[in-house]
Length: 410
Image (tube, rainbow, N blue to C red; front, side, top):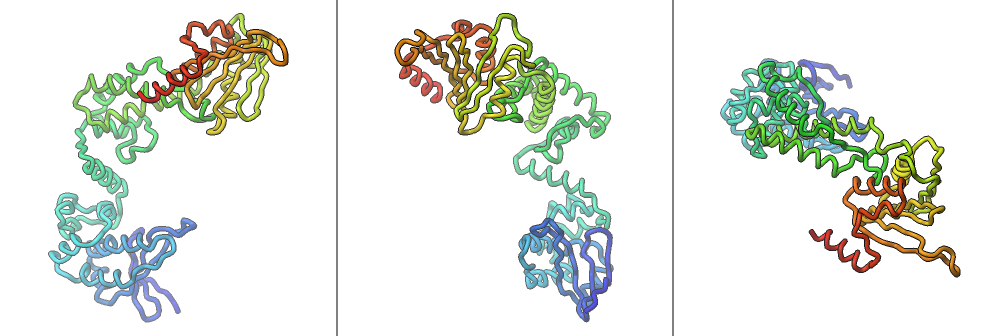
């Protein structure tokens, strides 16, 4: 049985084919399990073909009405042909007022009509036939994306002013707020660009000198969440203070841009001082809770702090959150408990007396990754004695647990 194309317009607009003696509307929509486009057909009559051929607006309205049925078919399901056929006469042959009434009752693909040039005012008021008087065969997908983004904001009660919209366009987040922001000055109207740049300059001053490094406790790629939040808070406060009328979406996109740029700059800088800071350790051993071990020696290519955090990044996991640095020669070490935001410093009270040496173990809480980095750096430089100033330390486990639970309850 041969298949011949009877009528076709540009692009993805449904075409009419003749399969044997039967006319069918053929449209591509959705994708199968292998991400290949799916094709659906709907039987039509010569009367339907005549309208499709002569009336672009009705043709596009039918496409918009059929697309939700194609979506319902999913990746493998069949098109509900009865429901599709039931739309043909009401969309193609009914008077305009009846078509408008139909579109107030059924599901339809708004973005498809917007992309094909529908006038937004009549479309919003349910006058689809009037809206499609301006329709074109050539789609403008960016227009549809912008309209969809505006509707999402309206649903959240967000109204953008000209400067708000310009800032979102500058960061590339007007259409897609989840994309990584970047600087796109060419996307902004030239009359508004100077105002946008003043907002950006305010944000840059607020985060000058700040750093958002990686968090080795969560692997080799995770960003330090607390540093990100600290930077965002500084930018938010400065921008809101200088421009109190900006919409939340505009302030948030500026903060996102600044944090992303600070994080990118921080990745190119060393996380720790790789050079030996004077009188430090000659050798240290690093261990974790799953039997991992690494020995650092002064003659290595990196300083002890940097080597330790690289060890953590390579080995850390949800079930591996306890890491130890030990100076065997001095009989001392520190144990980091990432799951509890705490650290223990361990010193040998009496070397080998009886079967085992005796140790003094003291605990304290740690304030985030920066707190851990300071402790590690100072231990590498001066051992447990260099940590006295980080007190209070306690050897009373029960007292420490009460303090830890108390902080967790705040």
